[in-house]
Length: 512
Ligand code: BES
Ligand code: MN
Ligand code: ZN
Image (cartoon, rainbow, N blue to C red; front, side, top):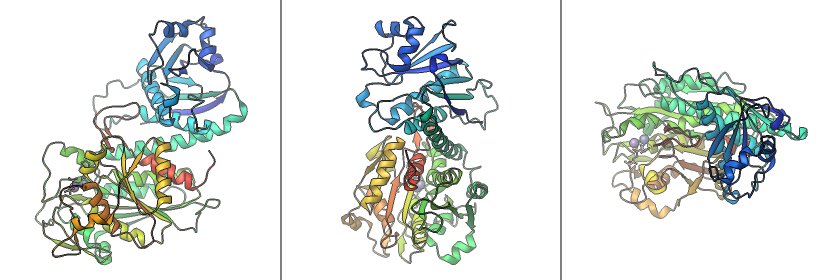
């Protein structure tokens, strides 16, 4: 699907020829302000009328549309509520634009013009607002129709959004915001696509092909380790999970070397991203119940996010050294599948007793993290749909975060806040390790009752090299939405992608 074009133009909203002109209003402002006030005046008080009869109050995501009858060059005006000013965040603007873009498409208009919304929200720059608006609109419009032969609504498409800015000196900043916003939306949409594809299409081999395609981007090299090579290296945990499947496993490595300026340019120590890439999780011999099992096609979200982030880093030409690692396999029951009680020797040399084959994510990540630790990394961040316990503890709105270094955790937290993909820290205390003790091996792969998200993270920590700064992100449940939201569709969300990209943009020290 073609993504909408987004442009920035110097000018005044009320003077623009447009199918739809957007203006915003904070709920607690006593009267219309800025562009909304100017447009209202030109329309003889037509917007004010909505406020005075309380048909429109400016509540979050509230929208009214009116025809201008030729009183200004724009055919229609769309007034969008931004809620109370003190509650407003960058994500308020992202959400508002998601709703606006969907409404404009529904009307049947092909283009919209909008000023920068949300000016006056504390601690946000025009660049960030333009970025958030671009992300909200593009992600709100996301659809996945690859397997529909009955595409209704085809033909209706919103193809152009123009940010209109009166101050010439701000135009360049806004353009940079749009560039980053587009990169973020493109990355998250790519993840949604990969996760929407069913597992009979999105096999480990297909994921490897997607990675190879990213190898065409400037500065990116891709290496796929096949089963034989992985055996030689001794990744017993990853291979153990792959044993039950007829699909060949792939250990995928992408390396992006951006030039010059940044803190860790070409030659610098790499930032390594590791993504759980289970293209389907049946649970293996510890088989999952049938209900909702189809959602396990998205158990590769972490890997897809790493692919998308490396691709976006290259497209933005960030001055960084980034490596992405995806251990990719299915988790299937089969005649050769691992069984409860089996003991696997991991790449790190440590042995693991597999007491539950459904705790497979931590097995493949154990080898992924051990491999990452050998690359002399500046930092390692892994991202995984790891535990149902994360869904129980944090629900739909927070990513579980664990880590061994305060500085790195703070950077990830900040990137999450800015991206509207927020993390919540959980404890990584060694006290919990008694739950992972095995009678026959160095550890077991489940932690029994209580603290399931924590014991999974603690298991992973045992495979991170000494002195390596590391953060683990559990995106189980944030990866999939049960309902449509402002800029999030029902199904795969891609949440985590823009957090990772924002983290890298921050590392590159690009100005905001
Ligand atoms: N992929 C699942 C976790 C998951 C569950 C992700 C629901 C998204 C939604 C993971 O591999 C898994 O099965 N974890 C088990 C671990 C248990 C056996 C210790 C779980 O959470 O039930
Ligand atoms: Mn599982
Ligand atoms: Zn899984």
